[in-house]
Image 1 (tube, rainbow, N blue to C red):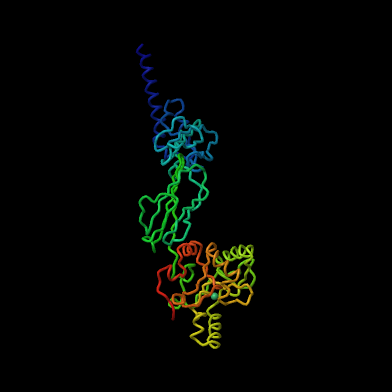
Image 2 (image 1 turned 120 degrees about the vertical axis):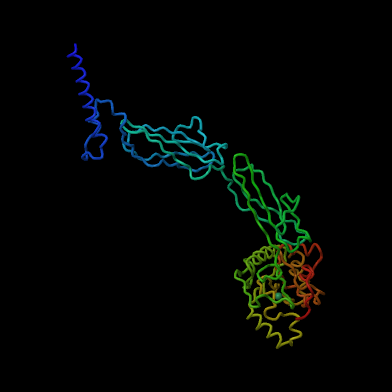
Length: 422
Ligand SMILES: [Zn+2]
């Protein structure tokens, strides 16, 4: 028996020695020749669990799609090696696991808005180490946006004018629209309707409009528009007041958008806005049996110079100044004015005011934005004799306001000093 026991003991020692021999090279694996199979040396010795498995070759997964509520997101794993892998997904929103969201796709809901999305992507393959990597959304999930245009303020900033908010088409429909008006940058308390009446106290100050759209499930949208008072000093403004005390600035100003009023005989040009209004007015006048055409529209500084010089040589300077402007002081140089005629002997004469065309434009011109700039009996204010043929475009709001208030000169309307002489 002793011999038997001794044989078992020797066998055990031999086994221990074999194990020691087998482990020693593994501990010094870095010194093994390239290609040596360490695991083969362990085979059958129960030491395999302690060795690293090869990694699955993969890239960082990516989230594709629009990070918006209702818009499906997808996570892309990309190529792997080995290619046959078992993929497990788990979506997270705001750091919280989304129950049941274990597929390749996720469509965020309204409660996900404002949070970041991420996906845990686990890959497994036989004989390889299980791999976990995260795909992270680049920004938070948002609510879908309205499709809209910028709002705009309709109307001219003159006292007593009702301004109107234009919102335009909005998609989707059914949005709640909120308005807030501001004057001079300050919120006007209670001014929250689509309309706002510009007051005398507001004069000279800009008006801003804030339009907010809201609807459940959509991002609230805020947009602004701002309107400035029409400038009586800016040569390019349709409100500019030019007279013998108020030359154009610069004196050789020339507008850029001169066109001939379509449908009107003659070759004269005007600023595009005035020309369009002139075309509409002419069509209405002609239909009413009060046809006319333009004998003059825009005149450059140079043209006005020679015109005025001709009048001076014919009539003398004092007389010429009563009906012709010096260069740099003419409304014709703004592109907002035109002289109309019906071809009768009253052309450029006071009796034009009694002609059908003269009566018609005096009565209806305001509806198209025109005034008779030099009315009868106002030479001490305007500096010019009665010129029923000289029409000035100031825009419908101002022209209609003048007519309804019975104010006949721009000087009076804007509270400016009379300009009888230079
Ligand atoms: Zn004129």
